[in-house]
Image (tube, rainbow, N blue to C red; front, side, top):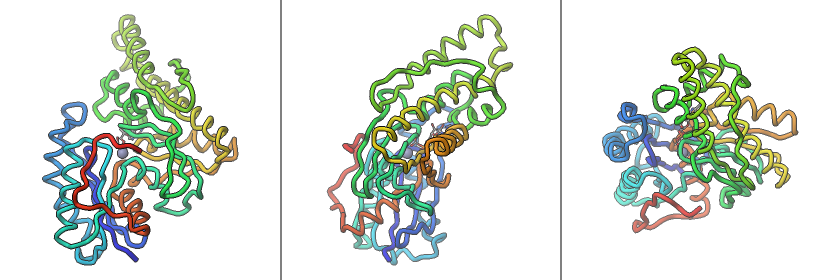
Length: 333
Ligand code: KG4
Ligand code: ZN
């Protein structure tokens, strides 16, 4: 029954988790507030905040799990992809701890971990399954054959889905990160009030940059006619933007299901918290006979629980790293 301590520090959340025999005992996430006033993540500030938070976060995760540090069998960390300064803090901390405890080190790919977050709680999808991973930095459709074998079927060629939410929010004067607030306002709005274009991208790839431009021009035009346009139409604008982002995502997910014949369908990443996406996934599942899965919210946004579960499967295969290993901002899949 291996006990694994996992650390996630790829962007602006400092997180530590303890997993025992594939069950998550604790999952601590310290969000960095320091970026809010800048309207986006400032990499250098993120690295410094990780340095300040990593010791108390790991300490609390151990206490909450009810274990002793000496009981830990392996130390896992996010190796890639992410902000290099942020990754370095987690990697160095993990290496130091592994050295001092004389325990093996496990390196985890952040995007693969988002996919495997679906295995944390029951009911879990059976293999092979498809996963739409939608976060502030990534948008991918992944085919997962086993915890050790995954393939990217499609991904964004420009902005990520979360960025599309956040950039739209910025144009509407909503503070960063705007995704959750767009979702909130959208709930009181009419998703068909305003029409935004759906891009025509080949295969299973996505594009969101054209949508952002069309929203910018639309708002400029509307504000010329009525300077209070945004204030008077916020719920309808948010609902219409959300509707388009969700329809872009689900159309490609359906294409992936049709092409692969796989009907076990998961979503993961911070944007899977979006109510429009969750509801539409359920509608598609009912309509097309899919079985759909969404991890608990704490395992959707960046978290060390997903790093721990991924590390657990690597532990079972003795897939360890030596201390020379280095993090990478952009990782090969
Ligand atoms: O996975 P995550 O926590 O971090 C990254 O790896 O990027 O995802 C953060 C993204 C942000 O863009 C945020 O606006 C978006 O997820 N997000 C949402 C919602 N909750 C978080 N977007 C739309 N609706 C939500 N409810
Ligand atoms: Zn992420």
